[in-house]
Length: 377
Image 1 (cartoon, rainbow, N blue to C red):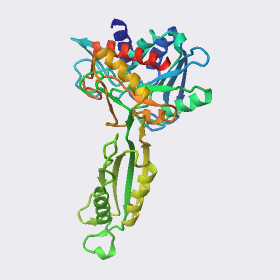
Image 2 (tube, one colour; image 1 turned 90 degrees about the vertical axis):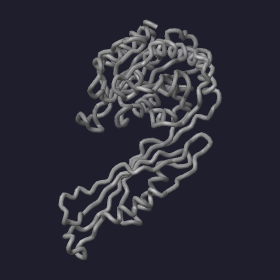
Image 3 (cartoon, helix red, strand yellow; image 1 turned 180 degrees about the vertical axis):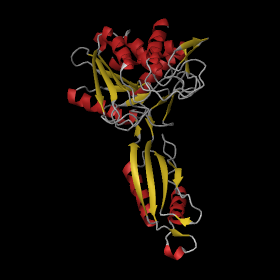
Image 4 (cartoon, one colour; image 1 turned 90 degrees about the horizontal axis):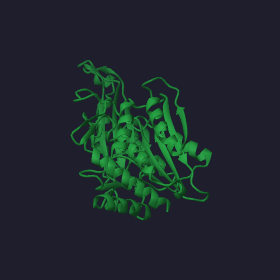
């Protein structure tokens, strides 16, 4: 327990607000190389700080097993969301109080990465190949993180058979849920152009607001589906509405809105973008979509059984296979191999005074060891 706790403290102490570079990767490299891992680090992105193109650091580490042995990957991210104020102790000054370890990233997800490192100590090299796929850009735009790592892996011929992402999936206690899939996500910006004019002379202007309101009403009334065996219904939400008209007696020239759709595997980002685009055009507007990720599902089977056995043996809990929640980098890794997410209790992730139970770190390390051994067997 002491060793995995120390590993988690080292990672938390290395400040790494997204996009992360530098010291936190130094710490992870220093942990992995003595265990026989060959570590490759590279940076992608050349934009200014704060832009979607800002530099992001990535790390791929591999410990090769015998020829023709299986390849199991752990995946995750070292970047964290900004801590905000009001912490009882420093967000990047890990502190143990009672049975909890406090610090930004304790749950999401430096604690889980510490557990992965501790876990591989008990997996013999002859069991098979193990790799780490670690980015500094999961909490941000996710443009130059895991997608860049996938490009690197393909170029170098690294092909995992299975991948476990250490997102904090547990809800009420460690082990009660694993994510076998996630819904897709698309954000769409809507615009309607009008003609500016004086409100007393409406015949000389064209008000874009009624058109946008009618467009949003039609979109809001859409029933995209009723859900599937493994996915909840897709939902469309209006997330922003802007006119920016500072004058009470002026008909504005433009009205804008934004919607966000979380969708199951009955749709694709492209099909939903096309549907929304047609409705926008019908009302005299345009739609500009950005697809964040497509839905994926790793159907219950051998991989989920491996995880369930390890969790049951360590905790006595049967993990529920689920597809609820937001997106993660598993949406990219699904193109490489079957992927499932499993990790710590998510009650405090992204919150002030984020904390993890120290006992859970120890237990998760043992679970990860059992999963890796079983996956490689």
